[in-house]
View 1 (cartoon, rainbow, N blue to C red):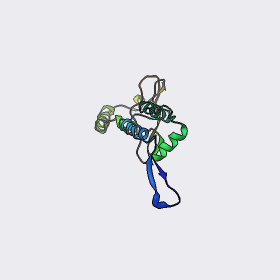
View 2: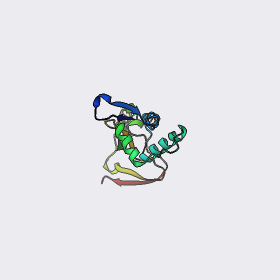
View 3: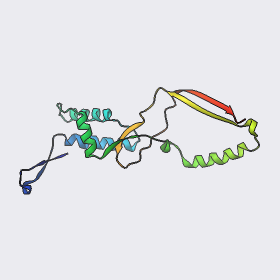
View 4: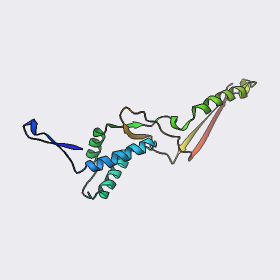
Length: 158
């Protein structure tokens, strides 16, 4: 982060580093690394990382407030988005192969043997479905945790 240090005359315009610019550099590097691995990051986690970096750099008085977080997000063009889809956890080649296999398996079955089945789950260990990420960057996550209570619903086509 840079601060403008000038008087009325724009010829004397100077940019100087602030005390938190080192924290910004380390935190944004960590953020980029975490998002590259599809790790969901929320504001509290980002503030905690900034606090940890501040302590490491000897800036014990640094407090990553909500105001700091908003300014950090603005400086680095970061927005808060919902994670959607399981795009990163599915191989498209497997999907195409499975569709072809399913067509051949389903041949020869009538309406009385056709069912609609769906499952729903109560997730008790799930990652957040929202994360901080750079504006304009598509935000997709991995597969949802399998640690859940599963309910299976089924009905016949007739």
